[in-house]
Amino acid sequence: MSDKDDKLLVKKDTINLRRKYGRSKKINIIERDAFIPKGMVEDLKKDILNKKAILPADIAVKYDIRVSTVKLLLDQYEKDGLIKLLDPSLKLKIYIPI
Image (tube, rainbow, N blue to C red):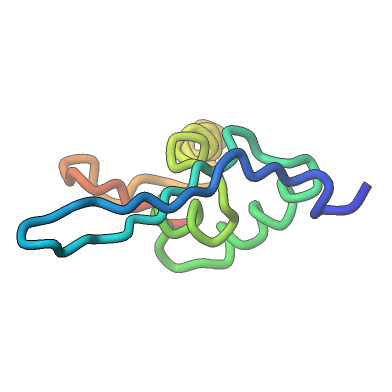
């Protein structure tokens, strides 16, 4: 099974929103994977450990997985001692490799 077969895109949709005076706005909705495919785990780990700063949203967009899934993965890596939180007082969680 290849990486493309292992990856599942749940939903991709475009919505037209009506606005004032006959204007409309198109919004693209992409529902990302709720799990990390088995073939991607090692690539993800290598990529995370080679970065200077790690943001969950950046990884989620790059690998088309949900931000919540990436946050769980980063929490696990933090418990394992691979990465650490830069400043716990910040609202935006920024991780750095150890």
